[in-house]
Length: 152
Image 1 (cartoon, rainbow, N blue to C red):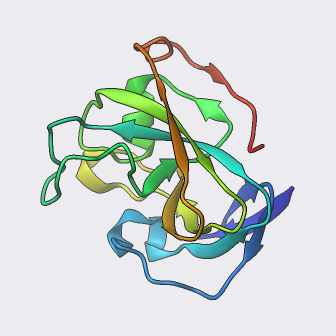
Image 2 (cartoon, rainbow, N blue to C red):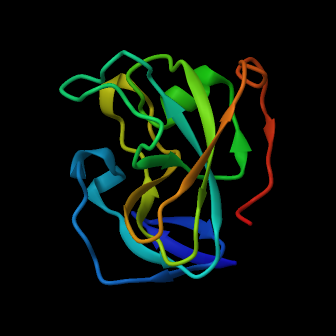
């Protein structure tokens, strides 16, 4: 387990190694405007939320192959997830994203954009081997909290 210190908080990220700092597509998306750039030495699983047909303010609707992923080892209700990742409202569906070893990510914690509380772990895909996405059908976890396994 690799432990990173980002914006004064600890982020545990298995199989990550610090890399040369890279710009973020949206520096406002990070607590304190701080993130770390890492290269994965082992694959990582994260969660991707989608907004089919609905755009975030100033952005196009999210695609299946999005660049921003929710980190952490906790699945929250849909409202908690939207608030902790500062999503601009409800989302329509979710996918598990498998990010392969060799990928480069910015990692840190979501700021309080769009009126959300922020504070949830997040990653921004920058490059390297292409992640794969497996759609989660239905809203089987949206109304309940629980836990999932870490990166594999």
